[in-house]
Image 1 (cartoon, rainbow, N blue to C red):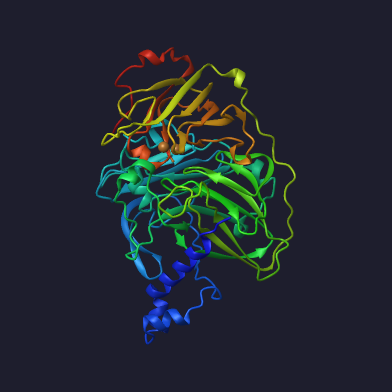
Image 2 (cartoon, rainbow, N blue to C red; image 1 turned 180 degrees about the vertical axis):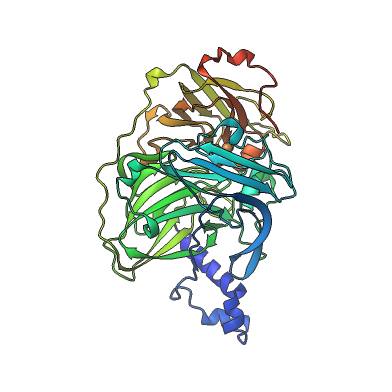
Length: 505
Ligand code: C2O
Ligand code: CU
Ligand code: CU
């Protein structure tokens, strides 16, 4: 499996000893050489930090503000935060409720908030051109009327999304409904939201967002995996069934998620809520922007058992500069026996989109331009994002087949606003991975692969976007404007009225 696992954690362990407060307190008298001699990494338990759990958003204002916090225990990190914390506070909404929050921009640059996976009206969706200036506020409010699920929010200003997310701005947006409540899934302390992000662990503990040429080509990759903003995260759990809501909030990294002892993860939901039945997976690929809801069964673990949720290495990646690199995400220490719970055998039925109802098929070709220009090296249908140009026009509440053709060697996690889709095929083969089932808003399109999806556009008309959720690709212009028109408007894509692009404040 993860052959570089041991040496990596060993290296990190020694680094930590040399830089942590522990050294100053416990071993100031030891010269470095003696310290090395005294340390037996193989026998010592790896150092961990208690998994942070995001606070709950209680309504009102969400400030965007630069601030610092102790991500690592030894030194504070400069961050940008939403709602005063990293990760941002978790928004909890019940289906049918009116959501409302006021963004106050205390940053020195424009920002906004996009509600990833929510079917918000276009003027509430955080379009990249629809930003809030420094010192200004903007109230986002809309009715949440969609399936229970794990959604999330993050800034989306054109060309600044990568930096703002990387430096700390993102949080969960969880929708609950009666259908899901009826299943009596693990909740409260037995339901754990887990935001997975890779960041830099350089000795100055900075979330440095300088982009090198490889970063601009492949996206910003970090050398440490944080769980809810916690490096070397560990959590003490009971011997029972847990629900984990996984969110890949990384700028660019795809993870191959697994458990250290190979036990199955029971996937019960994807981007848009529950799938049709629990599906056991020993691993799955998890792209930026995607969510997976899973049950992890610790019921039969003896007290003292310790397992790790981890990212397995794939594609032979040998270090953190590469896509496919793996490391631990979360150490789980099992303690006392918890409540007796069994896996649900069934989940509520899932309506599947009938591809025969599709009005038309559109093809989107994803490319990296060679030789590479300064900007706009990643394109969709040979186009670089222009905020004021409408690229496709579709009709609200209708179905289309969209085909994503990856004409590059890199994975592109494609994401669509204001709509949901179901994945039909990958390179012509029906989708079989549990993680690809159900309602999706983001899908990995692997290098040279073609992915066909059936899209159901949402109820609102206005300008939404399609983009790559590799945030460096997105900021580089791998994004198109999608105009959604009302069914009765009679507007055709070819003559969508110019200037009606969006309502800037
Ligand atoms: Cu998660 Cu357009 O974004
Ligand atoms: Cu989105
Ligand atoms: Cu991409």
